[in-house]
Image (tube, rainbow, N blue to C red; front, side, top):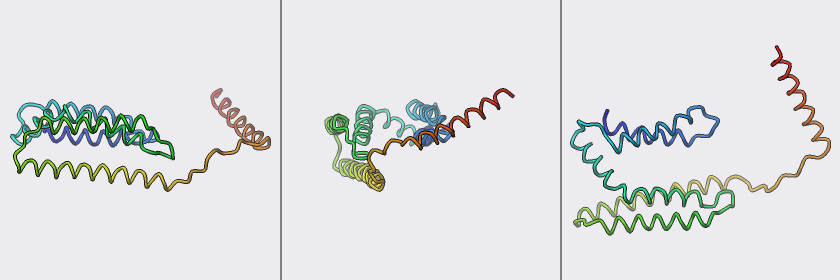
Length: 177
């Protein structure tokens, strides 16, 4: 198997795991993600030189990638969702992101050309994450904030109870058969 197959499994496993519980394939998303992660981090022997270099670079970048991904996750999950903000998650997330950035710049000794490429790549990542967070915020702002619904009145309670009792008696009758 090739190194890029592990990366493809990693990405597809993540996207499958993000699907809601109504989708049966979401159950295989997490194992697929873990297999892809293991194949990416510990590739098989006999890789092409470019794949071997990419795998080595990925392993070498884990020291800053782990706090960065964790920080971005905390920032995204702490952002306002349906008018609820988790300030602790936001603060911890941004601290992790800034710490990852610090680790990158402290341990990075680039030449001029690599510095320009690195800055361009970082700007691309920042723009991509920003657009993703803006899309999340925009999508969630489309849903109305209706607030708390009124409790059922007595007639509605009787109606719902009758429906539930009917369904339960039908289920008991079919279970007895």
